[in-house]
Length: 133
Image 1 (tube, one colour):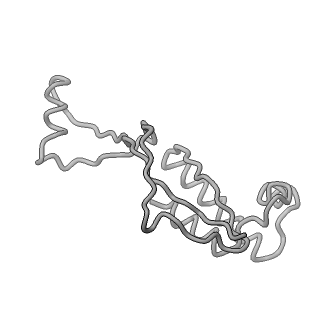
Image 2 (tube, rainbow, N blue to C red):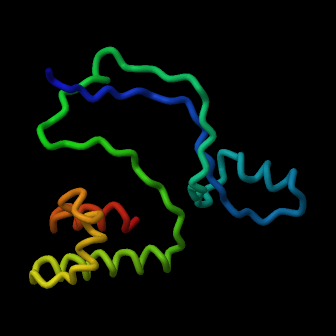
C-alpha cells in the first residue's frame, strides 16, 4: 500500500527582536512599530504555538518517494562566530569525504552509527548554503 506525506499548517507567533535607542520603553515601542523604522529585526528562535491545525485539501498531500524519510527540522541558536565554526566543520567534512579519508569515529557520527547513509557532498553543500545567511 502506498504511503503519503500529509502537510498541515499551524498557527503560531514567531518572535523577532531589534535594538532601538530611546528614552523610555514606551518611546522604544513607538519607534519600533513606526512605519518609518528601518532597523534590522532578528529572529529569536522562539515560536509560540497554538492548537489550530489545517490541512490544505489541494496541496497538502503527496506520495512518499522510495527511500525518503520524513524528519523534523532541528533549530539551534548560534552566534555568528559559532555559525562560522559549523561551516568550517562542514567544509572539512566535505574534503574528507571527497578524499575518502574520513576517520571511522567521525563517520560513525555522520551516519549515527550506520542508522543512515549520512550526507553526500551535494547535500553538505546545500546545508552550508542554508546555514550561511
